[in-house]
Length: 86
Image (cartoon, rainbow, N blue to C red; front, side):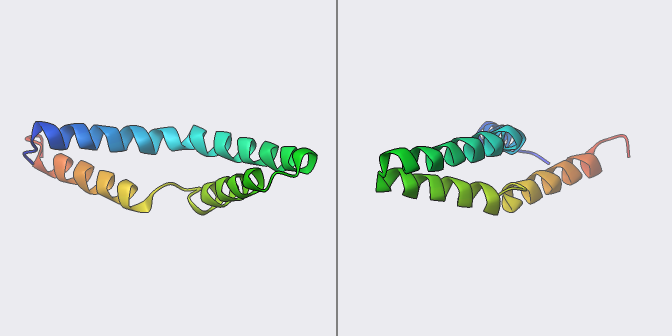
């Protein structure tokens, strides 16, 4: 499968994002929970809303972005099928 340089860079960025989500989801979840505790001390509504969004986003997307994961699998499969070894 022939890809342009731009497409290769975009694919590399998606691979990094998918790989990095394992650690990012934990950081987001821990920081959001810490913000919940901080909210109880300060009673600042904005902090509560940001914490709720962080927890919700990390739980909903816990397994990662399905579209990105599927794209990477399709490209890898296509590369494997196009290799001269087969």
